[in-house]
Amino acid sequence: MLDPKFFDDLAQRLHAALPEGARVLQQDVDRNVRAAVQAALNRLDLVTREEFEVQAKVLARTRAQVDALNQRVAQLEARILGKAASPDAQYGDDQDMNGG
Image: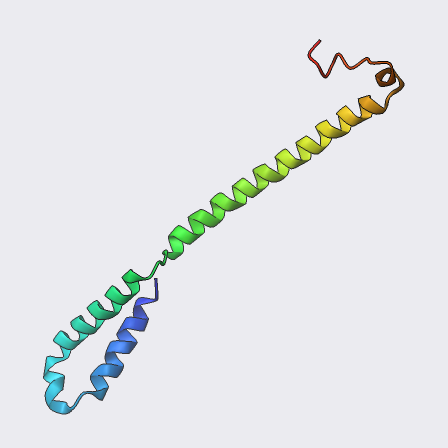
């Protein structure tokens, strides 16, 4: 969410803009402004910084796993294609790939 200092600054600006007689209601105005701004922000689909950081770490781990799996698949494909290109593979010796 936004920095709490933002709400304090906004409340102080609104308070300063009020006429002297209305400043008596400062706490009430502060509470109402905070509640209104907070309600408006809550209606937005926002996440906290902490939630964002957690998801960024999960994404980084997932990306590392996908990269490792891609590398492993490439190695396995190279081994399979290497066998297919060998002279034995020309004569139907593909029993290793078919489980026998």
